[in-house]
Image 1 (tube, helix red, strand yellow):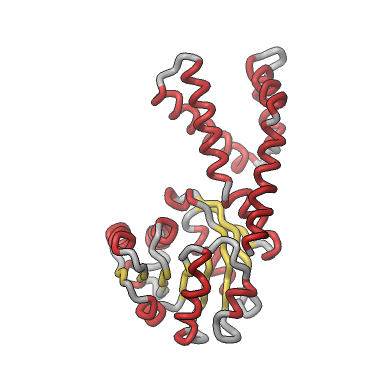
Image 2 (cartoon, rainbow, N blue to C red; image 1 turned 60 degrees about the horizontal axis):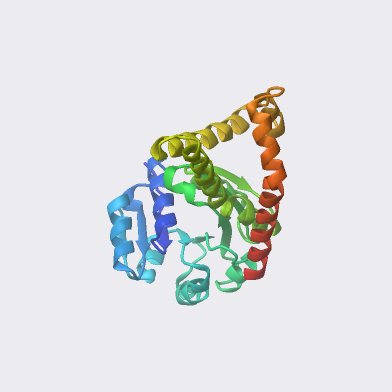
Length: 268
């Protein structure tokens, strides 16, 4: 039986997705979970989805949990931390999933010596397929890092990185689902233009990206090698790849990741 007590300060979709993953992996029970949110609809959705308690009181969650997930919007972090700081004890581990809020600011807002971890998850956590990266603060222990790995790993891939790389992670995997959705939409549009029904085109496009991603992860092959294996001499695929290269798809994606990473740095 799990003895973890986890609280979410902010009960939005990401918090709910993480909570469901933790429960599903057997890392925590609904009785060991709690959340707070000022929005009644968010509280109701969290409670309905997880079976856990949700309250408008941040203080109640701090008192009830040992692991505190800061899951409010970045602009709300300062006010939240000021409110809960007097109640933080050495027993608490603070885990922030607020984009662009550095460890230094988080650590400055809580009592000295508080163990803090900063995380950049992404929205596929909603379906147990997140790509998350995390960085540990000055007072966080090796065991805290391993716990973060276990928790985040329950909803997908979790990788520890130096904090200076989290902005790059934001540009790549944090914002990346939007790039993939755009590609799925565009590929489906192409299928419709070629004569496929919309429903069929969208399912084929989505499954194609999913399958390609699984091949990269499970074979360990370089994406370029896998691409080359599909491109028969004089065939349809190399013709399509040529059009994508002429349109600048590769450069556009590189530029998009860098732009999002730069924006994340400015937000800090």
